[in-house]
Each structure stands twice: as structure tokens, then as C-alpha cells.
Length: 271
Length: 86
Image (cartoon, rainbow over all chains, first blue to last red; front, side, top):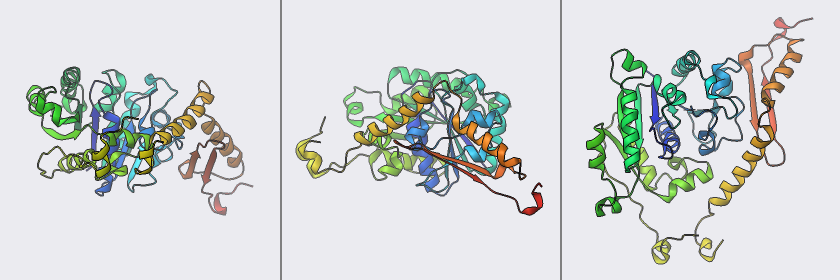
């Protein structure tokens, strides 16, 4: 049965879109049929991170309003089989996103895909609440940083009260994805540790994504890190998280990048 | 590119720069205007519908925005003679 997953956080800039793209690719590579849907109306970026920005014709709002069929708006990834993107509208107002329209589109997506990954906008307004409303599973993206943890706590509260599942008295499955994690700084005591964040938020951990320059390179290229650099530390962390998502048991580690000879010799280049 | 760039693979920032330039050129040009692709699709389909019956589910529109030229590809599955209008 199809699963609707929302990638959410409350706070902006923590890695929702990056994680949506990386998890989408990893799930599709494992043989699942995946659609990634951008809910950030007016400030879309999932198309850019997925490298499909030149191919967007119709978007979520066109489908919601009936101006285009779902099949016409879905953009199939040219590199990964079983992966499609539904872009957000860049020009329309977010009020064009109606509850009934979104319900219909999610229903249609459920018939075609195994996983529907909804990339939530930051904040707790309409776009964010609609992105989470139909979710069966939520991935709460959090940085080990005070404001991010606080906003995640707020989002967890909304997931437990403002979703279809919550309204029916059911529990929504919630997972924590800790991103931009620097094990060295955490060990030194200058960054919240995984245990600290888990203790405060008390939801199960899906994965720890190490802070890495590979993530920026991936978005520069328009290829999610699990595609552009599948053996890099963050990609391995995303692959592990994906396996946990589909129910496998994978030991929790923070992958690290082994530095190449040249890099060790010259250190990290800044420019 | 500095000397050490020779040893590493092609850097990613120039790719990012070019992708953004193309994307933003298109977004600035069309901001505030209605979607050209949608209008073209409607009008082209209206002309074709005068002559043959069309199934809207069998129309695919593809777009590729390039630096110098963009291509719009409209793929229409035409029914066999049965649905043809005089």
C-alpha cells in the first residue's frame, strides 16, 4: 500500500529539500516507485535540487485546480527509474492550494506510486499544514542547534493534532533525521549531541547525516547526493536512513569521509 | 581554477552558476505573465479539436528551457479514423 511521507521541520534551511531529494533517489534505487512533491508554493526549489528546473511545465497548483492532468505534470527523472517530481508553482499564491484539491491529488498519487514524499515549506502556515495533512509517516529534519530543536518540537505537536491520522485518533509515525551533524564538535561539547536531541524530542532516530561539502556540491549539480556521490558519507547516511524507513534494522553510525591523499596533503581548500 | 583544481574533478560551482543564470533569465522574463506553455497548449489543442476528437489524457507536453532556445514538445495521440470529424 502506498505511503505518504512528509519531510518537515518548522525551521527553514535545515535540509528538508536536500533530504527529500536524497531519500527520494535512495527509495527509487531500492526499487520503490517514488513521487517527490514540492509544497513550497511561490518559493519552489525541489526542481532545482533535483536538476529538473528546465523541464517544469505544469505544477501542483495546475493539477489541484484541474488545469492539467496529474500525468502531464509529473516530471520523470531522466537518471533514476521509478522517480517522478511534481513541482510547486513559482508564480501563484499559496492560497490556490485547496484542501479538497490536495486530497484529490494525493489520492491519485497513491494509486500510481509506492511512496509519495511531500517536501514541506518552512513555517507552520497553510503550505506546511497541507503538506503534512495526509501523511502516514513524518520525517522531522533537525539540526543540532537550539532554534531548530525548538521548532521541531512545535512541528511534532502539529503532527499529533493537525493531520488526518490525528483527527481519526490514530498515531502518525514520526522519525527524527539529524542533519548537518559534526561528530568532532559534538564530542568536543560544542554541539548538541544526538542523545541530547533525542531526549528532548523523544521520537525515534531515522539517521544522522554528517555535515559535508558533498551536499553543497550535489545541489550545485542538480543531482541529489545519493545520486551524484553515492559512496560519500552523507549519501551512505541517507541510504541507511532509507533502509530503516522500509523497515530494515541497520546499526546507527555516523559515516565519515576518508580524505584522499591530495586533500590530506593540502588540507581543506577554501577557494 | 587554481593549480590544485588540476588534480580534482571539475568543480561544481560553475555548473551551479550557469544553471541559475538560465533559470532566472526565464523566471524574470515571465514573472507576472500567465504561463506561456499552458496558453500554447490550450490554443494548439483547440485548433486540432476542430478536426479530430481528442482525449486530454493522451496529450503530453514537454519543455526544455535552454540558454539560447527553449523547446516545447506537444505529443498528441491521435485516434483512428472512427473519431474523425468531417
